[in-house]
Image (tube, rainbow, N blue to C red; front, side, top):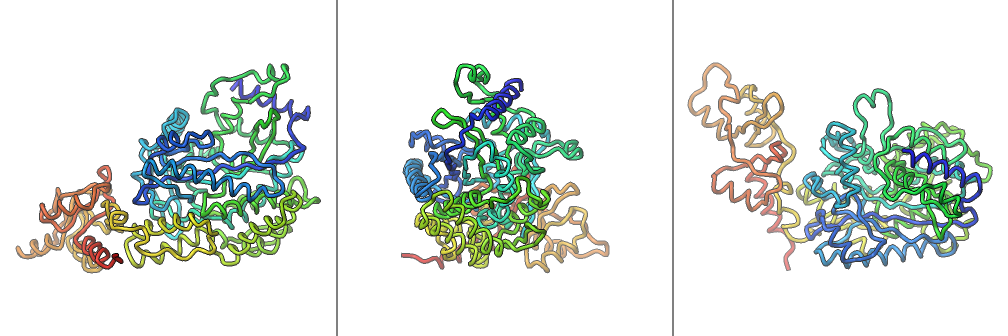
Length: 614
């Protein structure tokens, strides 16, 4: 803490003495991605891939199936946008080649549709001491499991014992270097435009098979790193992932000071230096203690300090844009945001008159509804995302790109991608949902997830903007092993259960009304304790019915055969044949998560037979 406070004092001196670079403007980017295996599922191969690639621009991210590419800074002028696209494509091709040696491939998507809760075990935390230390400290500070509740078309409610849910998220982060004098005004402007920029770029609509927000990353990131204890929620302490609480009145230091006041230091910065000794010797301090602390506070628009060519600078880091759908889409998103940052009206006030809570609400609306959002905007008007982007913001972004000296043809090319995407309303999230919903009517839930993922990868290879993509097709992912290899890919998750003390009549009604032959039984605590089947009921009534209603626990199968969710379908089928049973309740660490039946295998066989064969 002492080093952190001293770093901030030194930064204040550098700002006051005009040491922060102001006569040049650069852009940069960080590309997060996911590795997948031949079955389109997460592949925890990052260590092998990074060793094979042997490039300092490639680095670890939260999970073993994630990685990050740090793009070299570019001068923001001329053909900067196409250079950014070419650079990304080159680095991705190099990393893809390295991934192939581990039998993996790369996908760019905000949240991988095929990711399962079993992929989020702590063993898949990236093998870097920093991540393990950070996870352990956050777990200790929270003091209880992480709880997730996100509601969209479906509802996700679950718990997790570590920060691994964050491993679901991948983003495309864009940086803009700004002067210390202009920082406050530009940062406030960046906050104001966050809602509409995000609405045009959503690409994370599905998590653990549930259709949630158009940009589910926003809710997931906050909940997966929320270290507040219950007492903190009462006192309104802020989560470490947040949009902010007010406008910047003057200086970037306001943000840095607030982060020190609100958030305790989590990690020790190794190799610390005395910032004032560095300044006294004519050198530029790295402000290592500050950098480490700033890296554990996750504002969606983050203020950053850095050094390029021996000169210190400040930049605004846009952290809310998702990875994908293609590199071309990502660069178009960057062009839109950068153009708006440069296109800020000259007469726009340093502190907007729009109430901050409305801007924050705009951001959440964009994450929830994408282009379906309606925003509170300047001059107290309410406007839809689509109208605001097409009529006001895109023309402003073009002016900004021209003002920055960006090639006019490039400005038109990338901004037209945003224009056509918004006009057709086919963002990455909309395409994913449309494809998933269509495929879901033709096959299982997991088949729809796998085939949607397969189509994403195929389209990314062509680098065609998402608004031109055709809907995913069934069986696009290939053979049955990609869709039915594991029990959790085939099992039924929509369970109808009864309680031990319910009357038998209830079980018969459940079976009749829902057209099923197997009903799991739970106790008062919701724990799985048995199974009742149509055969059980027939045998019971075959012995004669008494006048007293029978209780389910008296006739249920108390120790039925079960199978683990991660077991192979081959194992489940063999168990059913050997034990002569028609179903298996599916467990995950002792908790009932589904059921697999003869009917599920018949449906699988039907789809395999009908698959196109060469």
